[in-house]
Length: 269
Image 1 (cartoon, rainbow, N blue to C red):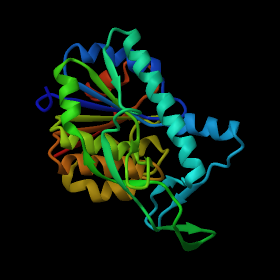
Image 2: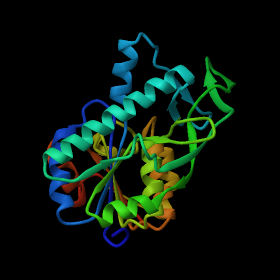
Image 3: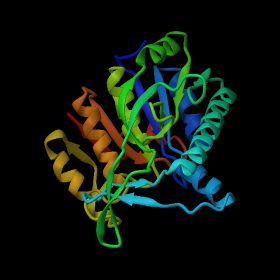
């Protein structure tokens, strides 16, 4: 059943995260509590783009948020990568005795709206990008997720949404936050390839172990690059009622269990 002690885990899609070790850890956790798994696709997407000779490009907003540039031809590669990673995680969980269900084909549980005009900085100047197929999350089909959990299935969700403009690239961290909020989850764990949040990355002396809700504006200023979206996801999840969000290192064994035991950066209400 959703709510209560429901745990949502977002597996980072970047290089370095040990997906096999994470799935082994998740198999043990799934035996104890309700679980939803979301994932990223960055590394798989980069590999597919390299294989097809497509240049990887990013968009950076005036406020410093970075995202993948996804024109129509790149969107098609993105969908392929998302489905590939989704299948791999489902298979890895099944291999470990977890009845997992992927939502990358017959039913994409997120509904989004395409960003038709994005302000981005290029060569020091702000320009408008109008062919990007990234999106903003508008709705979560929590009913089908609740039903999956009711029959002891672990939903596995890609960073993808349906829309009037077709499938969209959406931010995986914010997608996990939206799902966690819609389902009344207790905790969200976001695994990355860094230890957590730093005031001045990568200075270890500036590592931040705890962030209270009132400090989130400061935390957003401390975050650099992709970490900004992770902190924003933490803010959105807490605003929707979660008790705890943890950004932690997904490299190595038992990453989720170690995060729940105190590692990483804890964001609390």
